Image (cartoon, rainbow, N blue to C red; front, side, top):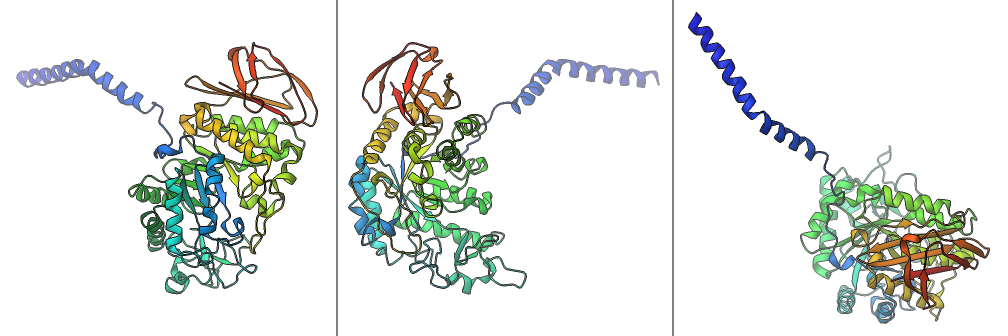
Length: 467
């Protein structure tokens, strides 16, 4: 019995010694494992195409762009767009348009009759491939508008696979719930076969026509896990660029390079024609810096086809503050967009369901965009996502009217100073940290900041200092 106790005691002692010998290493391992969970993690897991680092984007309304409204006719504008500084050509949907329940005489491009074909009004598949090849030869890239949320009523899928669509309580096809989109019917993304078809259709255009990605219509109406998988399958073919018509950080993790800055447009309108001052703009920039992932691209704009068609023109929305908004949208964090005709001073809402040709003419906006885009290309402070510089506020004594900030990257600096008011103002910048010699983008005048600089800005005027 005594021997048994001794054995037990020796066993306990041995266990204690082993535990003691391992205590330090064990604690280190536990501590190491424990700290790992607290290490910062990069939210954006996808890899942006390298060519997107300082890219700009242009939306093409092919129907209204030329009298012919074709791929071939549009090619004649490519050199002009290249010289303006456009990098990504975004084509509105190129697929055949549904006829059943069509709106207007020509219908909506977002009512897709066949996902694997080209709209004959625009040309042939060979014409489209030639356009893509021409765009690539000029050092630009092309993305195509993709409508995955719904199809036309007379899309063959509705006949062959009616189970791929959501239904009313009576079991009938329906437009996207709560919307008056009577020319389309809603897909059901709980159906795996439907998801596979849509993914394969998107892969088709990358493989067959060599496009560089997609702008995805109402992307937030479709489960993110679908988009995550689409991105992975497309990237396996070639590096693609994906733009979501949505404004949400969850889109950026694995699926989309860029989402819409809808809220920036809203706040710019409030600051100009809404006469609300810059408070909303400051809130937007604060949220962009503090809440959005640094490597998430945001598309900034003063117009696009939705705004132009349904909410007025660039002039009616921003009034005398339009140019201030153009400068702001091209210097904040994000990729600036120009919509068809903006650079020619488009001053009317283009018809959406009928022919309504853009009037092309020389306009100061073309040169303005060219200068802003050139600065974006050359100055790393304005590059996209993590390639660019964070927006840092420069405080001033007119904080209800003048917004001033700096972006800096690898010795490149850009300082926009914009008067969002209809009055001339004298403003003092609290800019001691950024004293130095600069150039002003538009006047080409050399400028020196010495700290606590006092400037006079006319109504809705702006300066963009850079070095």
